[in-house]
Length: 217
Image 1: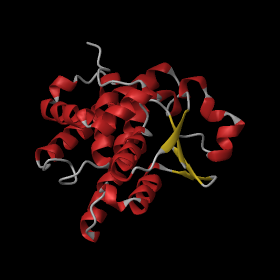
Image 2: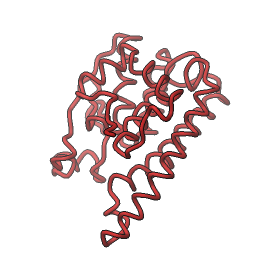
Image 3: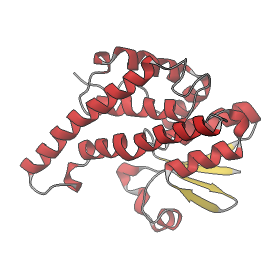
């Protein structure tokens, strides 16, 4: 049985929701292990043996760990194509992976600069500058996703929910922590409300103990 190591509300939510979709489509169950990032559990020797970088997610199957979210998404889609988590057409699949790569290598690291500016500058003033610039850039990324949603039919990758939709949910939640009011992105907020209402997504959110309301005015 596959086992997913995840941090509540982290990017690991993407494969977590996907595993729930797979379970609904195929009956294949899975195990989960919470990694409490705020307590440093990702830095324990046991966890570092699975992922030396100390990051989530990690997917373990047959005792073998797989790291990096894009690799995990690709594996899950190839392993369970009947779940429809990526398009079957080769060109459309490549376009989908291009979108996921942008989410992972551009949008996600921008938020890291918001959440952990101490990783990128020394001195309080410099760190505040890093954070302020990153919030602006993150907002721009969210606006680009909102534009993509405007062309979605009905989901970002077509007629079935996918990894991209789950990642979009994660980013809007993170936006609240960056003081970005989701009401200022109405189409995006309405879309994420639809994603969150999917039974598979709702199950993953319940297990992680998270909700969409992260913005504090």
